[in-house]
Length: 68
Image (cartoon, rainbow, N blue to C red):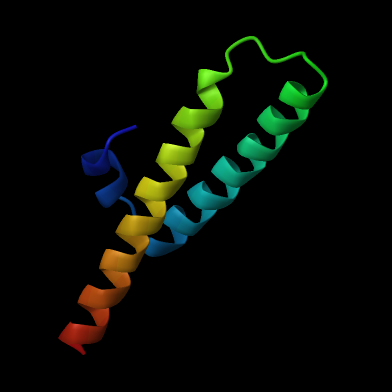
């Protein structure tokens, strides 16, 4: 997932996507704790995706407030 794909989404879609990513991270951490995680680098990738989504949400919030 890259930033351009994320920017095309609306604010409610981004919030939904953020929730899904956080849920996925929770499940990955749980699998890691019980040694069932095949690819531990997936945790890092999901954290970066969460950061990207949060950054773009913040950008949209700031652009909406300056336009109002």
